[in-house]
Amino acid sequence: MSTMRVLLALLVLLLLPVAGAHAQGDPPGVKGLFLLTDYPSQTVRAGEVTTIRVKVNNAGLVPQPLALALNGVPAGWKIDLLGAGRPVASVMVGVNQDVTVQLRVEVPKDAPPSPHNVVLTARGPLGQQASLPLTLTVGTEAPARLSLKSRLPSLRGTPRSAFEYTLTVGNDSGKDLTVALAAQGPANFQSTFTEGFGSNEISSIPVEAGQTKDIKLRVTPPRDVRAGDYPVLVKVTAEGATAELRVTLQVSGQGKLALSTRDGRLSGEAEIGRTSTYTLVLNNDGTAPVDEIELSGTVPANWKIEFDPKSIASIAPNDKKEVQVLVTPADKAVAGDYMASFRASARGEQASADFRITVTTSTLWGIAGIGIIAVALLVLLGAVARFGRR
Image (cartoon, rainbow, N blue to C red; front, side, top):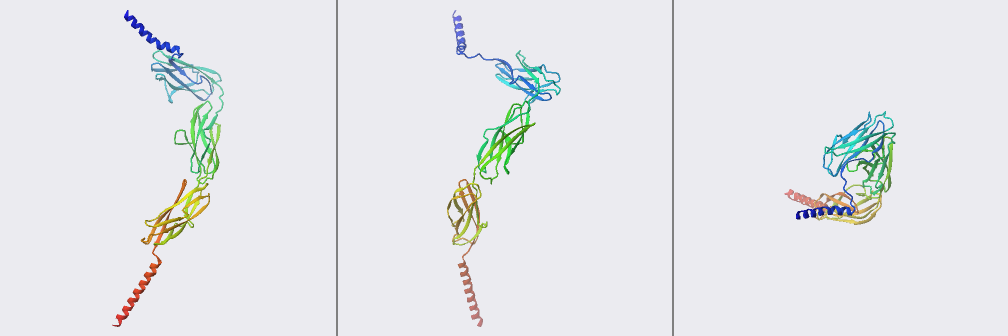
């Protein structure tokens, strides 16, 4: 009797979760083998190939090899079962997973316009099976159609920027297409196409029927381009179908510093211990002002260097400013050639120039040397005259 009570208690405990689940309205789980396709009834075209994708779904069943078979294939038609691009005769599907197979349907050129019923069957060794009836109607297919979209059709940057657009190419026709890519921009603008997740440059891309693919368009303007908006026309073509999209580069101005001298000669002379002045010329060859420019330089040890002015508030595009640089060689410098470096730094821009300075001794020392030599000669001549008479 006690054993019976224990069994009843266990039975109640097992039934409680099931009763609770049904009380809350949860649907029972779906189990079985299924063949699924988006379009079980569609039009095919005589003399062309159509690809139909079918998912083999295993809902809660033990994994097992499933043999695939086709019934009702019309005479003269060729339908191949493909998996990962290769012919297959069976599939193995994991629990609660699916595997995709393709039906490659090749219709004869002389096939008359009419519907045909084809059945795909998947059968397992344990008795499970599923069927998918397909209605394929031979008819006149609509011509190829393409679409072209961009997430961000207008981008902003400087002449040194690379403008990169993400484009989506759509194949709205009933067959696979190889789509040619082209971009037409202003003169000296460089345009290249790459895959959406790759770096290889491409000029065309295959797009399956009814599918889309992402590509990237990279446009590089010339460095000397002026500020403004520049359109680029993107065009995709395939078998007479065309789609176009216009993207825009909003190029903002950017300054470009250059440092030189009036005559372009980057050399000068200086005397030991004396200050020499050189004139530097700062040019803005860019398309926007260059602001907050600071001058600096590097000279040999114990030399002095000053700039007049030390800073410049702004230089307009295609304008220039002159700066005086005062260099004083060290008192103990040795005559010879020395290198000095002059720099101009601004917000986001900088320029530099190496300047060769030839250091000579003072002319006073030269005159004094000549005087000493002359005195020595006079003394020598006097000695010769005096001792020569003896």
